[in-house]
Image 1 (tube, helix red, strand yellow):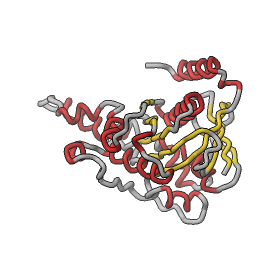
Image 2 (cartoon, one colour):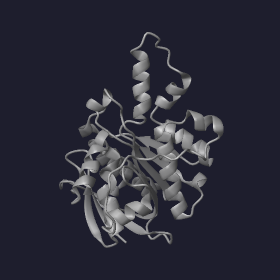
Image 3 (cartoon, rainbow, N blue to C red):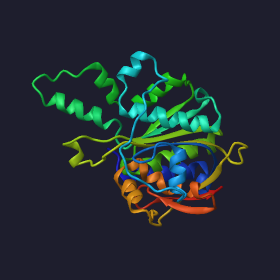
Length: 285
C-alpha cells in the first residue's frame, strides 16, 4: 500500500518534471453526467445546485445497461450500471462519439456489493467463487464494460485514492488533457457496501459524476476550469443534506465543483485531495 504522503510527493514530482507545477492547469468542460441519491441526472442536479429546486434525498435508481450485449448485461452489477449511465449522459451532452474518448475511471473501492458477496462466499462452507463474481471484483472491471458498450479503443486509466478519489481522478484527467492534448472522459463513482462492511466503510448508496474535458477554449465548452494545489480547507455546502451526501460518498466530493458550474458565475472552490494538499478550482462559465 502506498501512503498518502508518498502519493502527494509522486504527483508533485511528476508535475515538477513536466513543468506543470509552475503554472495552473486549465481545461474546457464540454459535458456532465450525474446520478446519485435524489439526483436523477445532471438536468435535475443543475436545478437543485443552482437553488432553483429543493433537494429531496431518495435512493439512487440505476437504469439497466441497455448498451451492453445480453451476456454482459446479465453479468453487470451496480458499478457498471452507474458508470454507463453517467458516462453516456456526459458524452451525449457534449455531442461526441464515446468510442473516440480517452477515459479516466476513479473509485474509492469499486463494486461494494460484489465485494460483499465474495466475502459471504468465502465465509461459507462452499468457498468456490463464481467466475462472474471474480472478474467483476477487479478495480478496472467497469472500464472494461464501458469499452464493450461503446466500442472504445482509446487509452484508459483507472485510479483509486480512497476518500480523495474524485480529486485524484480529476487531477489525472486534467493532466492528461494538458500534456497529451486529447479529450478525456472522467468517470468518478462509488457504490454502497451492505452490512457488515457498511459499519466500517459507511457508503450508503451509489453516486457518480462524469465530465468530458478538453483543451482550453474549446468551441463546445460549457465552462472552463483551472486547477492548482492549495493547503486551504475544502469547501462546505450550505445545504445540510447535500453536505452530508458529500461527506458520506467519496465521489460526491465533486458537489462543490458541480454547484459552482450550476450557479453560472466565476467562482473558486476547494476540493478534497490528499492532506495537506487540496485542489483549488477556478470555474469560469
